[in-house]
Image (tube, rainbow, N blue to C red; front, side, top):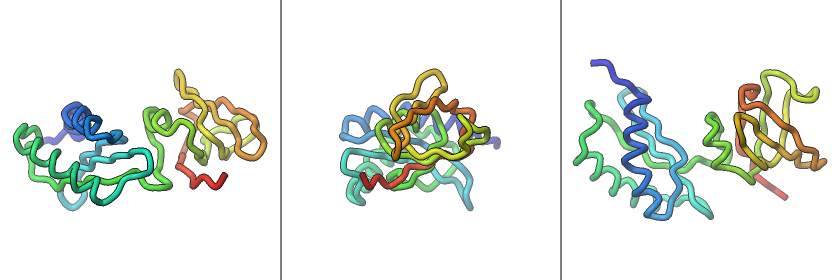
Length: 157
């Protein structure tokens, strides 16, 4: 049997996002992948952060729903977690999700002579990230395609 990981992850996202939102959380990501067995990872966030109790509550609701809907044709482990303090940002929606937060980006190609930038996400539009450098207040327009790696930073402002 060929498992289409992205298709399943997207179906799960469509199914659980309204429920997660209704519970007061934001759905950061859904991952379905093989890691010594299949793992369905639901990643949540909310103002003030996610607690273990939050993860347990969502896990119970989502687990029951997924059992009833039966959209995953193999056995899997359900994990519900938070993005983490220094979560890697890999998709345009991740940058949008963390607008206003401090990140560090390592670039594939330089932007205004810089290969690494640390700043606050001001805007994400049409594949361009507007990043305000923390120390100087200078703004950079960074194509998302130029970013090799980006992570949230702990904001000590």
